[in-house]
Length: 412
Image (cartoon, rainbow, N blue to C red; front, side):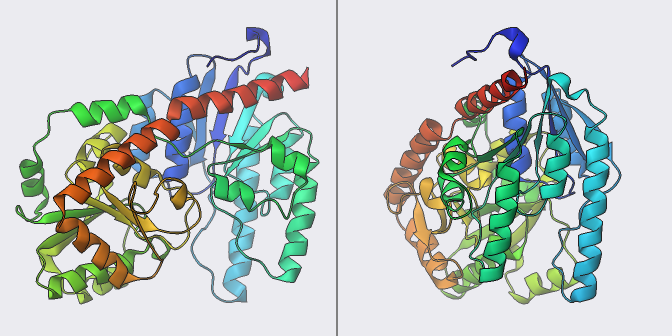
C-alpha cells in the first residue's frame, strides 16, 4: 500500500523523540516505522545523552541520524512527597529540554512523533502542537483510577483532543478500548491502532541464518543438554522477573533439568544481584547483557533461536515486542493474560497464558512444554504464522505514514 497523497503534501521530515534513558519496545517500534519511511522523507531521532550505546549502534546500522539532548526524565519509583516532587520537577525540566530541541526543526513541513502521554504531558503536547502536527503512541491501557483521578484525566483528554494538530495512535486494541471513558466517540474513531510489530524481512534473515546453538551455549556458559527458557526485556518487577526465578526454583527442586536466561539492557543494583543469588539457581539462571550479544537488532534476533521456550510473565504490558519476535521465530511462548498480550497469544492455540503473579502456573506451563515436543512444535508454528500475518512492520509503517501525510495535508 502506497500513500494516496501527492509528493508535495507529504512530510519532508519525521522526527521521533523521547526524553528518558531506558529503551525497549517503544524504541524498536519507532525504528520499524522509521526504516520503512526513510525512502520517502528524512527521519531523525531525538533522545537523551547517556542512552545505552547499543541503541546508538542500532540507529547507526539503520542509517538513522540522531540528536542528543541533555535533560532526561526520571522514571524510577517515587516514595514520599519529597521524592515525588523532585521527580515531577525533573519531568518538567526534561520536557522543556525536549521542546527546545524539537522547536529548532523546521516545523513547516515536518511531523513530530513523540513519547509523551496525553494524561501526563498536556502542556508539552500543546506547545509542540502549536508548531505543527504531533503524534503520540499509547502502548499500555489506562489503569483503573479513583474518582478524582478519572475526573482529572477526563479534563486532560478533553484538552488534548481539542488540539488541532495532535493525533494519537495506540499499539494494541486493548489500549484503545481503555480510552473510551475519557474521549469522544469521534476522537476514538480517529485513533488508529499501529500495532507493535516485527520486521518480516529481518525475521526471515534471522530464521534462515546459519546457527550453532551449541557454540552459543558454550560462549555464554549455558548448560548444553538442558531445555532452555528465554526471557527478554528490562529486568524489572512489572515484567515478572521474580516469578521467572521462582518458577525456575520450583522446577529445579522437582529435579527438572531446565535452564533459564534473561536478556536485558538493565543495570542491576547490588541488592538486586543479591536477591537473584538467594534463589540458589547457580548456572541454571543467567542474566546476559544484550550488548554482549551484538551491535544490531538482527544479532539479537538470531540469538533468540537458541531458546526452546520463551516466557514473559508481565503484570502490566501493552504488546511486548520481545514476545512477538520470539513467536515470529517459531519459539513456543508463555505469557500472562493481561492487556494486549491475548491479542497475540490465544491460549492453547498460539501459546500459553497464565495469570500474572502465579509462579507455580508458570512452572507448570514450562514443564508441560518440556515434556511434549509435539506441543512445542504446534504452538511455535501457529504463533509464528499469527505474528507474521497480523503484526507486520510494513503495514504498520504505512498506516503511520498515511496519518503523517494526512496531517500535513490538513495544514495547507
